[in-house]
Length: 192
Ligand SMILES: [Zn+2]
Picture 1 (tube, protein in one colour):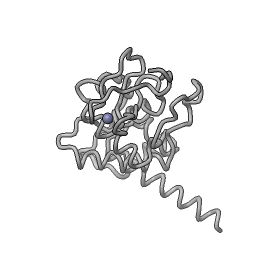
Picture 2 (tube, protein in one colour):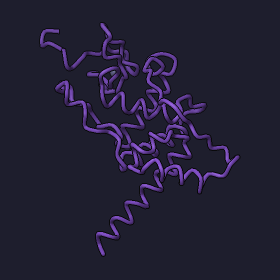
Picture 3 (cartoon, rainbow, N blue to C red):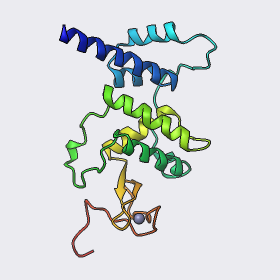
Picture 4 (cartoon, helix red, strand yellow):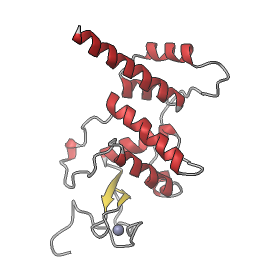
């Protein structure tokens, strides 16, 4: 009985989260990855719950794959969203400074993280006027920051603010919050 209840609750949670993701116009592959539902069930959800003309579009095709926007034009938005991703536990409070190269893989998408991701994104949309990052780009930001191989979060040694930095940058920018020079904890030598 207990097992059945647990399974039922988990299934309900999957469906709730999937509907929330559909509301954010997430792609089918995104919904599948974060809820574990099959494509077939996701298609049925679209058909059953989304009325034609309800204003919810269904995106097809590839998810975004460019980090440049987060570093340049959309940097303010990306930092606000990254703060929410940290706050709601989608990203760990601190990335481990010197992580082994193939340890970047604790798989981020999961049902519980999917719900946290919705919370983080909905809060970002509430607090940032004219928010410029759509849901698929928010997912991409979370995954890119978690992987840390193109962009990552760098905590300021002076004020503790989280800064998004480019992994390949030769020189790190000053801290957005206090202007102190950011130091790369992973490569910092004691005499710097
Ligand atoms: Zn700082």
